[in-house]
Length: 254
Length: 254
DNA sequence: AGCCGAGTATGGTCAGACCATACTCCAGGG
DNA sequence: CCCTGGAGTATGGTCTGACCATACTCGGCT
Image (cartoon, rainbow over all chains, first blue to last red; front, top):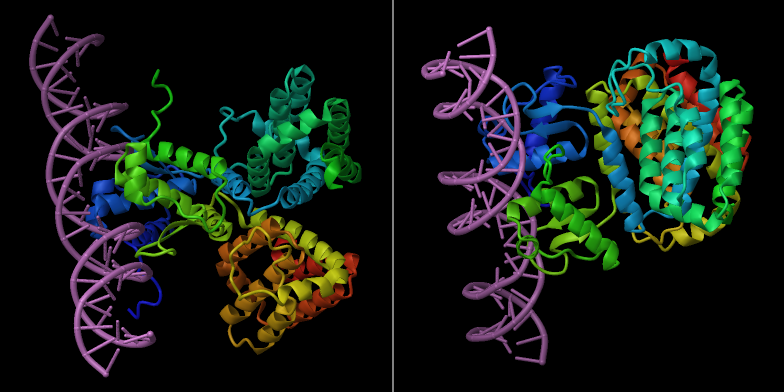
């Protein structure tokens, strides 16, 4: 080893091996990884190094650890990229390595895309409803076989909740639910995950924006327009509506 | 603690405290965190727990650790969300929790947006060139104060390199560089980071697609069209060109 | 049959040691 | 005076071994 590139750390080797094992053994969500002690012995590293690798995988939303015994214990493969994305964006914003402007521009891109595709998909809403009926609960887990994560009534429900919201915090909470529902209705889980992460990371700024605005009437009216456009399958109107909505929410950036 | 929610682990507490310290002390990229031993004593946890937290932050691209002594040693705050995004996407694809279709649809969204904004920004290219002249090197670090990461000649350079590529791997390498350059030319670092992550995570599939295609003539012609549209500031043409390009690269998905 | 406690496998945490790395500083020679 | 080389040291990287907390498993007792 010439030494100009840092020697691979032990936990990185574990990471590689675990990823290779996932690919080679065709491991799927729900499968279990070997225990920390066993993995340490197999890979000839200390348990501490194995733990660091598992912590990384947990951060990336790939595994979930559970103490105790039985089928649910140990490191289980999962798939929740949302929280990793959220942490990433929140910390990047905190370090000012991303400007609010860039984040909101990105959000506008995603909102327009989501609204368009949600509207286009509205014609097949009946099919989605039928599949959604089989959903076990409000799990946020991304499941490989799910065709759509969309909860049919989620958008309307969020609109109602916003009417009843007493504080900016409450309002923003349901506002996030509304916009995430649109992204989920687009049928693309990656886009939905990014939307969720963006909104979670921006929560603080959204609350400030609402407080600065004072009256949420304009925003609520926007939501109704967006909802109507999507449910009636009018993609062009949906795009216009979300664009106007963002301009209303962040007038200083437009 | 009622116990229904798992007790916070030690490293999570460290994570919270470090993030709080970043916010409260106004730490910026380049600043140093206390050493592992010192942090462990301050927070009354073991060094192993501190290390697990640092590993998480490193995964999220927020810190970078360097052994030894001096100003560059220790845990330094950085901002490289790209690799975290890449790992996230690659592992999600590996676990089949995201379909290739979803990833490519997302890519199309970003490509269209990037091409459009890169074309719009082409008129201010002279200004960007001037700022780029002051760039120290080809660092991939996201710097807070950078207005644009765009390297002026990057697109043309990648096009030339693709002409000379002998293998699918080589071709894809420069293809990635080309598309990332477009995203960087849009001036939005978050979008550029997502593009880079998408392409890195998809590298394997892109190589397969190129091999399946056999002849890269169509793709190379597309690249020229895209480049021309962007440099001439024709946003509509740029959008059309990238859309056609993606359809050529993945005919089976359109 | 049912319940309850011992056993045990699993992750969570800690303490302490040692190694590798890379800068700092100072003594000695040129 | 400057330069060079080695000792000193602060930092991350790794390992060992221990103990705790949790939660299932199993067997024996009622």
